[in-house]
Image (cartoon, rainbow, N blue to C red; front, side, top):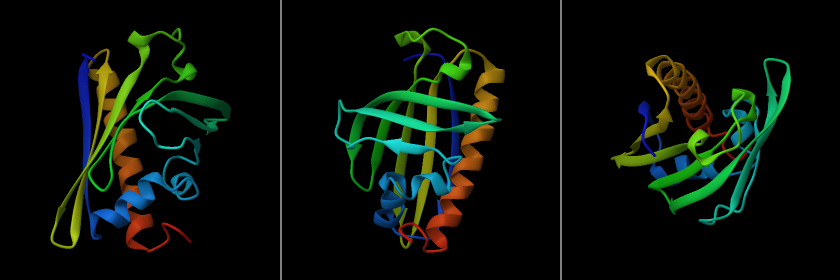
Length: 146
């Protein structure tokens, strides 16, 4: 996909396998992903859905699992009907989570492609920074599986 990229990064004081577990554990995800309940089996080509409430509105976002490299890379497509756009391929984003472990810490980078303009990219970056800050808190507190 093309469009403008938005990227957020954070360093988590934990090894990559612990961060990976938080990224892919269906019971942990709502703790940092804006309360979203995720359904998927994490196999490339499989569907993925995110369900929850956003600003008082119920939503069900959808996409597909695109790439999975445990402890290193997770890439999914994402479409949100709340954006008010038709469910067409050109209205999907790809979300790419990259993990890069250095010693005991792991840098997590999250990139969203296909932003239509700079304002949309800035909004996405702000949301993804918030999500990554939540991920960091969950992992560093050791509550990823609690």
